Image (tube, rainbow, N blue to C red; front, top):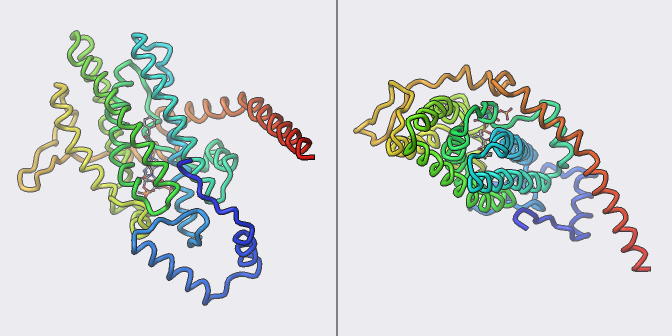
Length: 341
Ligand code: FAQ
């Protein structure tokens, strides 16, 4: 509903097939490219059935599938606390939130499928360690306050990054992001409200909130990706209207929005160099440990192995569900064919 726009017109499909089999001439390729560039310049949406450069398709597939994997792996750290939520209300909220993240994964896999890759191929890439997912989900959830920090900070950072993606030049991705952002906004609120309850609670609860905050602060700042100077994809993806705001600018927006929220909660920010710069009107943080970021991205974070292992087991144990669904679909198709005579 939010992502699909595949053209199934037989004439269109035949034309595309012919173009692929004989190979478009240089002149026709140049014309197609010029028209694509013009549409990007006009801020028009590119749809699944439209011609697009192979590199645009490839980079979208990379980003959208990694985003989908992040949503699904991102269910695990909070999922660990569903059975231990401290009240029925908190449990209901957490269940709904974790389910939402699974739904986000599904919208995003559907958006990526419109680019020509199957969900099975994307999942294989994740499980074989060939595809990335967000660094942030390789950190542990040691206490209940971690659930608050994920909602407040991780979902807060995700919204900062995803709101501009609602204007992404690729229609199916942009439309998926609109619904996702609405849900993420509830996630951020519930996390902040959970942190507020802890920070207004007993001395032990305040300490638990501060301790969790100390562990999440720096990894969340890293979540926006490497500094602009080291961001290999940004220049091209910004030209294509996929990325609208750079990694560093989004990180800055997050810092400016979140420092006052931490102050309101009465939490101290674990950065002795943090200061407000009067001349620019922005908060400035101390140096980020990029070695830690790259170590986590390359698979050596605190929970990388555990996360992938959990996903692999879930995939293997879920094989019967996929087989049953396929058998049911075949049976339905057979019955329909019989009914049609
Ligand atoms: N983690 O050149 P750039 C969520 C990689 S959803 C791991 O700057 P780009 C919801 C990058 O892939 C969170 N790898 O790359 C939720 C590239 O490697 P590659 C996910 C990272 O694409 C909340 C290399 O570094 N959100 O949280 C990371 O222009 C709570 C060079 O980097 C999205 O995916 C990282 N943090 O910018 C769920 C949003 N950063 O691919 C559950 C969509 C960079 O060449 C609970 N994605 N890398 O091998 C994006 O906006 C972009 O892809 C960026 C990276 C900003 C993530």
